[in-house]
View 1: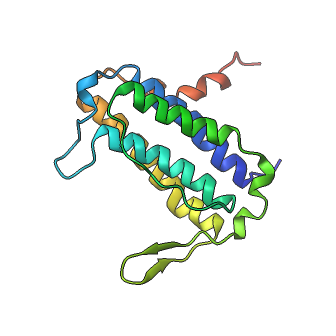
View 2: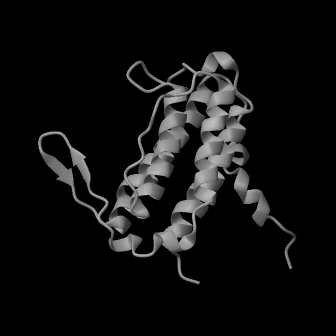
Length: 167
């Protein structure tokens, strides 16, 4: 079966959003404003942006208007709700909504009367996937920096479904 834009988006982002939610299960309320460096976003902003980039990819690739990121959550339960909403939106996506996504115009207007001109495939590979994982990994790193006991199994929690005895 060929790799589709639907699979790369939904099957790529949704399980990682579930992992992100699991990471927050180990966080403490005072950590939502934590950041790695003074000029970096907070944990709440990193979570909001990971959700945004997943939802924006879905929107743009299916011909909808770009997703607007909204505001960062102000509590751990609200952050988990933000993640659940993003994951549910992806999982509800019909594969046929991605028909033609590879060539769909997914250009992004930027300041200075300029544009990042990309079709759907370029947008997903060069923009959406890197941004999504950047913010997800940074959220993980903030939690580790705050002393939360996390490891690769927490980050890659979806891998468990592939583990089985050797034949």
